[in-house]
Image (cartoon, rainbow, N blue to C red; front, side, top):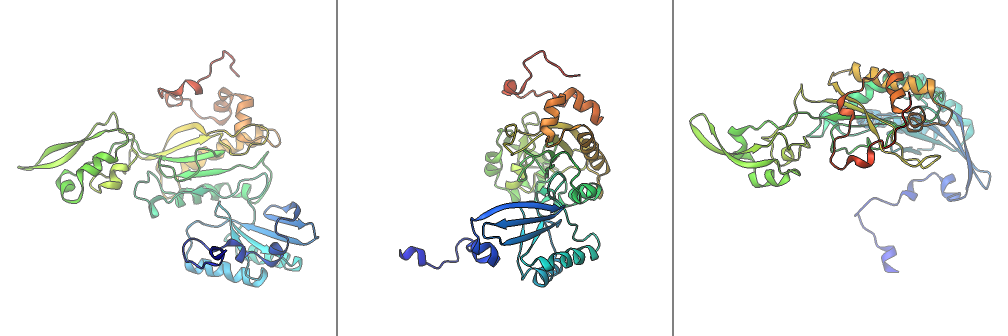
Length: 364
């Protein structure tokens, strides 16, 4: 058909054009793969052909100089072929086994810039959102928190000594363009205060009807406010109905939501996408609020390490965090992690009946 030959610049190019020759030649005919060591995988095709993947931790936001360095490494050892994973790792794709050890030695010679790991029963890189760098409604930073947490958990990235793999995610606000709903450990930025209304400039820079319509809970209404000796058109917010989503700020820059005291971090645990052994699960609240503490977020880093170490000490082999909690019970989870149980842990949503415990069985 003529459509098949159509050339267009709409959409991404066909990914098959960028595959290494060994993958193109054996596409769909792979027999098995092995994890040779933390961060190093070997895929074997039915033809006997092999390709090695060397996974290294990377950043989501990179400088041009850093990208050039990555490309130089790929050109030297991988004929220019590499891939980025969905969790911001880099995988150097090595077709020649003789180049595998030299590549690993080269990566290690560059200090901690290219840590090898992130495979198997360990902690891989954190998938995260934009944070202060780009997003306009974040409660916390993204890259900074991820850097601080992964610096502390570095030993678990470069090894495979946990009971199973642990997925950590971060979303810098409840709009959640991250994966905090279904990760083993989730870091969530939360707002706790309604937007600040800058009455003196709101009517000059905002379309008031759009700001009102943007609110999903109908918490905004038009109002006339006195600024000095002048009455101006503005809005009023019903604080009890506000759910701190930031939609109003998206439509109106005179309704900023960020607040250094109200904004902070909530930690969630027990989510997973995998269908192995037990069905997929949603994350559940573990720590309701931790303060926003740039540049190293010590309280958050400490709390996450407590959870990881309790899981490492108490879980059985292949048991994900959700399965470990289900086996020992939430009462025991709070005890072994040292996390305080608070009223925020009790789900008061009006349709929450399906999440409530409806039996008299408790695990202490």
